[in-house]
Image 1 (tube, rainbow over the protein chains, first blue to last red):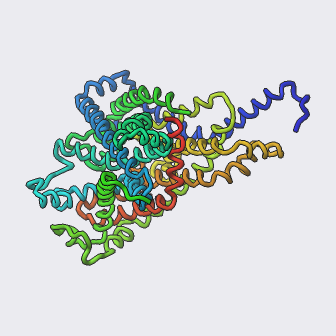
Image 2 (cartoon, rainbow over the protein chains, first blue to last red; image 1 turned 180 degrees about the vertical axis):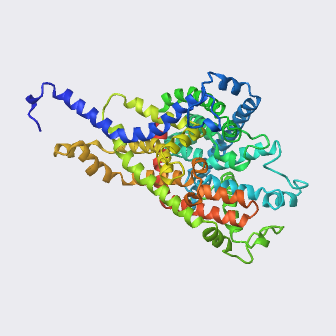
Length: 300
Length: 274
C-alpha cells in the first residue's frame, strides 16, 4: 500500500483507476458487439438513403433522398405484412404465454416425475429451428403427413389439407408453431416467479376457506401479473423480429409474409436493397420506440 | 410425493403429447425404409429399422463435414465469448464507473435490432474483409449475438457473490484483476458453464446468417446443410429427418446434462426485476 500522503487526492485517484480498469475490461466485449451491430445500423441507414441495386451493392451508389422510404410506405404489400406481423405476434405470443402459464402451474408443485416433464417441455425451445420446422412440415404434409391421415381417419376433415399453403390455415399453423416452440420460455419465467411466492400467502388463503380457483385468482394471479406482462412484451418484440420460423415453415406463402420476410424478399429477390433497408430502418424505429421504455423499467 | 390433480394431469398429458410427438416422429422417420416412410396408415414403429438414411447423409451428403463445422463454430464462439464476457461482466457487476447504466441499456437494446437488418450490412462488411464465406465470419457474428446475454447473466451471478471474499483478497494485496482470476472465476464455475451452454446452443442452432453468408458446401454448418438438403430433395423425408436428428440430438443431450445451470442463469435476473 502507498502511504496515504503520497497522493493529494487518494480517493479520487482510486476512483479514476477503477474507472480505467472498468473500461479496459469492457473494451473487448463492447468493440465486438458494437462493431458488429453499430456498423450494420449505420450502413443500413446509408443504404436506405441511396439507390442500391445488385450492381451497386457494397460500392458507391447514387443518393436517393427519401425515395426509398416513400417507395416502402406506399407499397401495399408492406402494410399487409405489417398487419400480418402484428396479428401473428399477438396471437402467437398470447398462445405461448397461455400454454407456458398452464405448464408452469402444472409442474410447480412437487410430484413424482416432475423433473422429466420440466425437461421435456423445454425441448421445443432448445432444439434448432431448422429441424423442428422441417418435422412439422413432414407431419403436416398434405399427402403423406401423419396429421392429415389421423384427421381424415377421425372424420375431422374430408380430404387432404394443405396446412402450410392455403389461407387462412397457414397463418393459424405458424401461430400454433410459435405457441409450441416458445411456451417453454414463458414457463421458465413464470415458474421462477411462482417459486418465489411466499407459501404463507397460500396458507392464509386456505385458512380463510379459499378454494383452488380463489387461491389462483387472489394469490397467484396478483403475484404473476408483472412477470406475465414482461414476458409478453419481450416475446412480442422478439416475435416481430423473428425471421427463421415463418421462413422455414411457409417461406411467407399463403398470407404469412411478415415484415422481416418482406424485407428479405425486397433485398434478395427484387434486389432493391435501398427499399429493403428503409423497411428495416422503419421496423427498428418502431421496436426501439416500444423497447426503450421497457428497458428503462426493467433493467437493474 | 403426491399425485397431481386431475386438471394438472390433463395439462401434463396434452403438453407431453404435443411436445414429444414431433421429436418421436423425427427419430422414427429417420429409421424407416423408403417404402414404409410413405405407407398409409403410417406405422408407429418401424418394422425394418434401418440406418441407411444416416449413412447417406453422413457420408454422401456431407453431413460429417457439417457436423465438424458446427462444432468448430459453436466451440470457438463459446471459448471467445467466455474469455471476453467474464472480465466485462465483472466490471458491470463490481466496478463503479460513469456510464455503467448506459452500457447495460445499450447492450439490452441490441436485442431489439432485427436480425434481418444485420444481414445485408454484414454480407457487405464480411465480403470486404474476405470473411464472408468462412467459419471465422460466422464466429464474429455469433459473438455479437451472444455477448449481451452472457454479460447480463454473468454480471447477475457476480453481483450475488459475497463481496467479503473479494475484500479479503484485496486486503491480502490482490489486485482487482487478481481478484477476478483467483477468487471470482473459480467461484463462478456454475455460471460459466450455464453461459457456455447457452452460447453453444445459439451458435449451433443459428440459421439466418449461416444461410445467407455461406456458399461453399465444405463450409456449411448443420443449419445451412440441412436447409440445403431439404431444398434439393424435397421428398426424401428419411434423409431430412436423419439429418435433423444429427443436428438436434447433440443440443438436447447437452441441455439435459446442464439444464439446471442453464435455467438458473437464464432466469436469475428476470425474477428479481419483475
